[in-house]
Image (cartoon, rainbow, N blue to C red; front, side):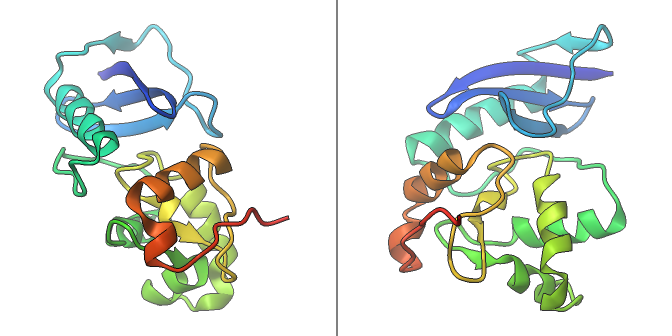
Length: 171
């Protein structure tokens, strides 16, 4: 069974998706890889994982939450799972490069593009903080929710000041 709800965030509408026990998706409207709802999905705003996820993401945007505790389940390949676990370990307000994520998971910086591809498929935006990953030059690149949202999320976290990055868009 797939449960869902929507919430209007400061950065646009968000779709929350869950199974019986855990959050399985957090997607900005219009983002790349946005899932298609169908008749098997049930609108259930009071479903416990959805209710908890909505409360936690509201707190994040209000600036009162830096860590998420809602149970999450992300389906993907073994490599994607490795990358997503590494993303989840990036502290609030900091940034790393795709090459650094590759190094952390033991595949070497030469696999930065593969890491970028897996990062782009992250099904739980914001809570699994793929927005905290920049190019090796410190530029904004590759965010399924859009680069302006990525910049806004990093600014909300103060990552631009903490990391000493100018957050320029890569051309």
